[in-house]
Image (tube, rainbow, N blue to C red; front, top):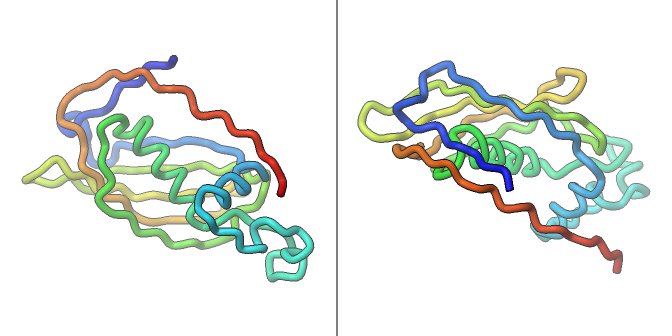
Length: 159
């Protein structure tokens, strides 16, 4: 197992940033559809999607939100972080095989409680902004190093 260490509220400064890159796969899209129950054909049916404004399947908009949550929970600030709110604007479609860069930046720190506001921006491999918004999180006040459990393995079965 890999160990990860969080960043505490006292260690954060306005302007601190973190990023993650992720290539979106068809499997990511199918697993998100299965876990969310959103089986809109624009995400899953290539024939249907070919007749839409996009011309092909696209990822769910909220998949971008999941990637932001991944950064918050696993690296910045990391374990112990609690989501308080999230705003998102979806600016461009995310396509299968897009390589996304998720960038979070601390824009405000509360004077009264361990709360941080972070700007969130996701761009694709062509540097097109596909999603942007703002996260507000309760930041851990105690340092933690934790073992990250392995992700569950799934086998896809078409019905």
